[in-house]
Image 1: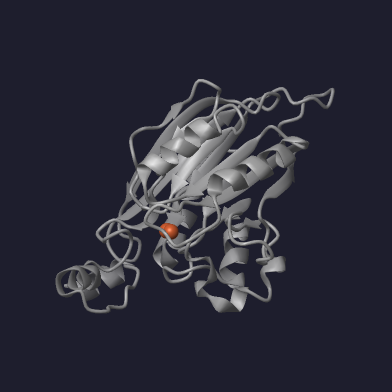
Image 2: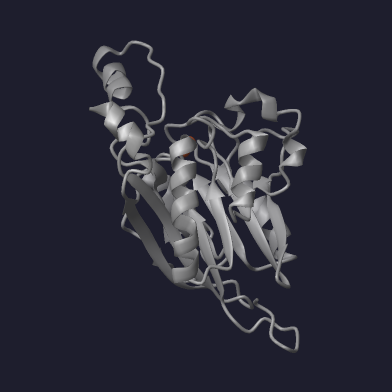
Amino acid sequence: MILNKSGQNSKPLNLLFIGDIVGSYGRAIAKQVLPEIRKEYAIDFTIANGENSAHGYSITEKIYLDLMDNGIDAITMGNHLWEKKEIIPKIAVFEKMARPANFPPGVPGKDHLIIDFAGLKIGVLNLLGRVFMQCMDCPFQAAEKLIPKIREQTKIIIVDFHAEATSEKCAMGYFLDGKASAVIGTHTHVMTADERILAGGTAFIADVGMVGAQDSIIGMSKEQILKRFITQMPEKFEPVDTGPGLFNALFLKIDTQSGKALEVKRIFRVVEPLFPEKEEGKK
Ligand SMILES: [Fe+2]
Ligand SMILES: [Fe+2]
C-alpha cells in the first residue's frame, strides 16, 4: 500500500514494465516468473506490452483478461495491434489497454490511460515510431499534446515507445526528459544495455526486450525466419513454444510526488524449458 496514515504518499512506487510477451509460451513464462519477481522487487504496479500475446500477433479478449488475472495492471500495444480484427468492435472492453496514440484521429481504443491505484494516479502512454515502421502521425507531436493533459492529473507517467530505430527512441527519451517518469522502448524484442536516468529524472531504455522462447528469432521460429531471409519468399512466422524461457523487464522506483525515477534496473531472466514433454517431441 502506498498511502501513509495521513493519506499522503510516502513511499516510492515500485513499477515493473514487461517487454513484448510473445505467444502462449511468453504468457506461460510470465505467469511462472511474475510471482517471484513481484516478491523480489516488492512490485506495486505492473505494465506489459501485449502486442504479440495472441500467437505472436495482437491480443484477444480472453488473453487480455487472462493477463489481468495474472496481476498485470495495464497493457500497451504496438504495430501488431489490429492483426486480430475481432478486437476492433470490442476494444472499449479493454479498459486498461493503451493503443498507440499516434494513429490517425478517430481510431478506436484508448490513446492514453490514467489508472487509479492505491491513492495514486498512474498515466500510461503508448506511441509508435516512424523510422523503418508503417506510416503514422508524428509520435513527438502526439506526446506533446497528451503529456500535458495527463500531467494535469498525475506526474507519474510511463511511456512505451514502440519503435525500431534506437536513435528515434533515444530522441524520445530526451524529448520527454522531465515530463515523464520513464520512456521505455519496445518492439525489437532484444534488450539493450543503456538503461539510465536522464538529467530531468526520466528513466530510459532503448528496448526492454521480450518474454518468449530464447532459442528463437525474436520469439518466432528460426527456420521460418531464416527461410524468408534466404529466399525472400513469403513465409508464415509462428512463435516458438519450447526451450529455455526468456523474461525481460524493467524495474523502476518512482517518487510519487515528483513523478521522477529514483532507480532503474534491467531484469534479464532465463528459465528452464516449461513443458518437458514438448522437449521430448523435439528430439
Ligand atoms: Fe513486438
Ligand atoms: Fe512491434
